[in-house]
Amino acid sequence: MADTPLRSRKSYGKADKDGFIHRSWIKATGLPDHAFDGRPVIGIANTWSELVTCQVGLRDLAEYVKRGIWEAGGVPIEFPAMSLPETQMRPTAMLFRNLLAMEVEESIRANPIDGVVLLGGCDKTTPGLLMGAASVDLPAIFVSSGPMLNGKFQGRDLGSGTDVWRFSEAVRAGEISLETFMAAESGMSRSAGVCNTMGTASTMASLTEALGIALPMNAALPAVDSRRKVLAHMSGRRIVELVRDDVRPSQIMTRAAFENAILMHAAVGGSTNAVVHLLALAGRLGVPLTLDDFDALAREVPLLVNLMPSGRYLMEDFCYAGGAPAVARELGELYRREALTVSGQTQGEIADAAEVWNREVIGTRAEPFGASSGLWVLRGNLCPRGAILKPSAASPNLLVHRGRAVVFESIEDYHARIDDPDLEVDEASILVLKGCGPKGYPGMPEVGNMGLPPRLLARGVTDMIRISDARMSGTAYGTVILHVAPEAEDGGVLALVRSGDEIAFDGPARRLELLVDESELDRRRAAWEAGRPPSPHSRGWYRLYVERVQQADLGADLDFLVGGSGATVERESH
Ligand code: FES
Image (cartoon, protein in one colour):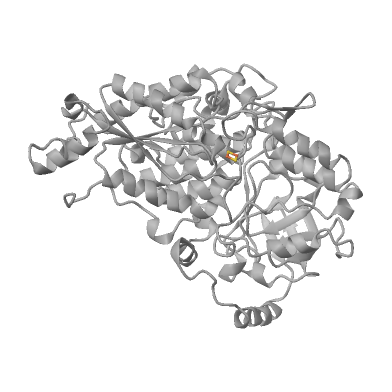
């Protein structure tokens, strides 16, 4: 056990006016005298809100965390953190991930707590909470809200998001009626919890286990499963022990832990959004991690998990099949087994204790559900700082392709023209979307998986190459090239693409080239720079964000938030 003095004692341990003020006011919550006898004070950062149905169970779950904290001899104090409802916020929840990270960082640092339990779930809350906690580096543990139950409609399973995209394309192609489509919405989301597919939320929850910052099965236990309450309880117990032993996020989320996260990401067919989140989180911790690590580390990892959007099943099935620990077991010697976790066990010990209960859901490396499923990181004059593609969600026949660009200058331009029967487009065309990067939108929305032109859908075309500086939903699929860096708004070559230009994509060679000669690009650049309008973002968070946000290849964190400031605040509270 470490002999580290608790930082909460600086506030609650003093027999003077200052200590009086700290204790007296917090006692108004009902805390007894003995709560201040030197026990660890544990903050619970809760992103619960009624706006985020994905996390609507967190208010309840926090009570089980508190039970565990009390039981282990700590004192729980819950506080709110910004909720980021993926399906409700405009213009995109991603615009506010860094704001949540700032809020939670300063909340942890400014208050007299010794460790923190992070309660989140919906896509951006997991990275936002982790980034903030990483920059303070007090002991921390993550508890996710858990996935919702499988969607059910007309006798079949419905996957969050994935079946929305599928059904809406079917409506546009005239295959199902609008009434049927609308009727499906009640069956898709029928309990508290995050999206039931391996979308961004469940990807990030799986990665909390791979990073070692959450207890085993944190990702897969359904939100409404009583065992999630037990996991919350046990997380409450563990955080007190982590404080007593002074085990910090920087000791858990090491380079080896990030390598495990990349391996797990590939094995589960995880969301492309995890790339920007892991890069940003690594930046907070000073862990060297680049875009190329995603491509290089995961080349030998096949798709081991048969979940939508890359496969067939849903998160409930993943839970019953063994969850992330069972995937770790199947990764075998590829996994960094020596990496420590907040459970006190190594990753190897957790993997050894796991079993696979359903081979339809979790396969083996010898018999996987797909070939190499990591991300492809592309380079070329169209994306000198990188772009990504998820090959497990793409069409094999499009992985090497040349086509003419059909360009949309903004997502509004896309919506205005995509249904136009006179749009000059065929199945060999490449749809190009600009203005959707971190600065351009702002916030880098999930619009990269543009729907196809109805004329082509009606002819049975189900996929085309799409290129943008946007992200796409973790529940989406298709041959979609994302996160082009630099983005159009930052002066990337993407800004210079015109309809009719030829683009060459070679996935296996990781190349993406705009086949326009340099002198022509120089002319276009001069015209683009001369015609730029002034920024419409003159104040507040939007202004700070567009002025300081980094490009996608660096995780889209604000430049001045990279790294950490530790937990020390020298000045007294007045
Ligand atoms: Fe919250 Fe999918 S919308 S997890």
